[in-house]
Image (cartoon, rainbow, N blue to C red; front, side, top):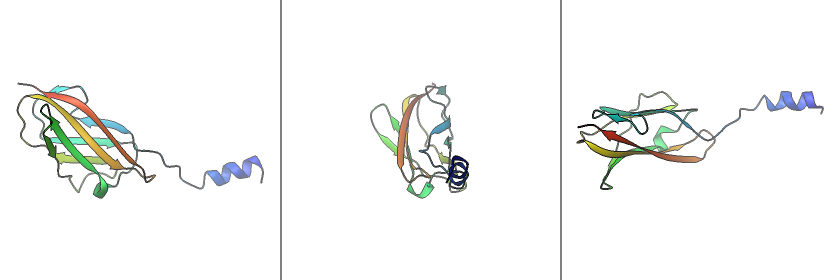
Length: 112
């Protein structure tokens, strides 16, 4: 098989990659009013049933969030609990389309 044939064959199979966080609300390092929800958008589909989303406060108290079922395939969304002003961290874990578990975290602040 020549180079052209190999390239044509390679195009027939989808390439999968680890999920990368593209956008988030509240945004990383932002100071915001208390959010009503947390929303994350990834570069590809994630398995919502095998994904987790949480907010962790400055004392390390973890607030596990219940994921919305109607979010787009590349997004996680969840109502946020009522939180007082202070420093927080969003933590997430998703199963990527390529079958790998990917996690991340970022800080944000709730303004007084």
